Image 1 (cartoon, rainbow over the protein chains, first blue to last red):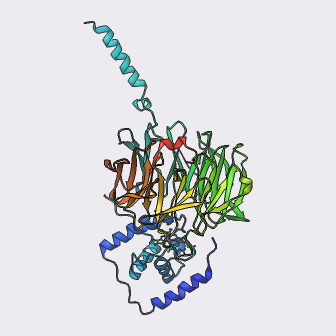
Image 2 (tube, protein in one colour):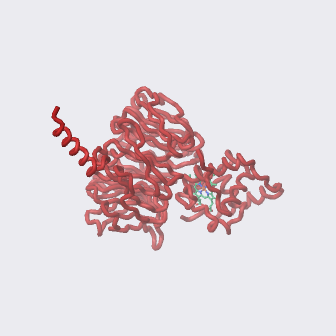
Image 3 (cartoon, each protein chain N blue to C red):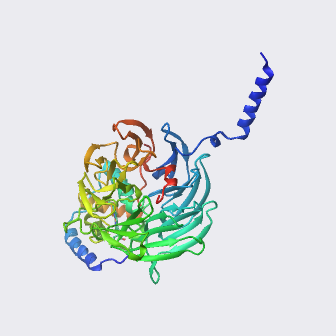
Length: 116
Length: 391
């Protein structure tokens, strides 16, 4: 998989602009956290795998993500990566929520709530 | 009343019970499995009376799980995301054999003669052939497209002549591997369109179609005249318009052919594309509710059932293939992931992941016949697939 580097740089630059002046992100409410965990495991999971070990999209496990800047990952989630199969999710979450997801991904993503 | 003969008959019946496990005394033509993805488990069901017979555990990571069947309909070959290949006995509901054959797998298929199980893998990119009885590895066919570079494999389908056709997502190619000599497979390569995301063969095994993500169109290989190479059909169906985001990739299989037409999901458009299955010219489009994922013909071809990617995934639509329009729209539950028709199509089973149920729907009246509780169901697979080319 060759990645268009120029595009990444462009996204990074755009994001730096966006990140500047952003207040420290508030934690999403507990119910919203649950919904985000569900979304990542189930809907992001259709490409990244439910266990986030990779599929059509790369693995989203801590070992792979630690060295990548938060803003870069947040931008990827919100705006996608044109020319690849990664779509943008800004219709379904805001920047703080994407930031919360990135932080959780980097430390090991929480499991799905059990007990249906 | 003469008691003795009665007693001896009874004794005989009892001893028969003692030696023949009851599960051996049923057919398998109406069996199937429903994947409970998050739990790494599946339910074994029967569709004569629409009941669950039990569960089988310990199947590993079942995201994107795929299931193929032995030709006797007794065993399910379950391909897990984690590279697990598990052979499950549907009658005893026990694991007969399990191997970890790759790091990341998305499915597989059984050969024409039923003796080989072939897995398609993302990591390491390629396909592998196993003995269907023992799961012994017979051949490893890496999808190498440049020195040291291996592509993720998609769309694997069995075709006559012990061959398997598949596409290379990272290398824009279709490949055909012939396992007539299982330990010495022979592979032929055909350049194809950009980023094939899945593939299908027509029910006669003649045409392989690879849906393309990287461009608007479908690559077509005529396996009866392969020298002509892969051609492009439905080119430029997006008319240069901006694609809508695709939150889930569509899935293709030989269920796309109906009423002399191929019915295919458009990528990045809320449409089902229709092409004549002889000339492969576009003959129409049907606007639908979202990005189609499964576009499945009822076995008689009179209807096409469609489900959708997030965020429209609570809906199912039914297209009439004569009128080429949607005739029914409904929501069987939240996050509809898959559909499977009974072999002759009078009913369809639909999984709703976030409603934790499978709904059995009458395809003539659209009435709900039954709801079965299932923990976050994804794929539904019936043993009748074992008798079809390209499943």
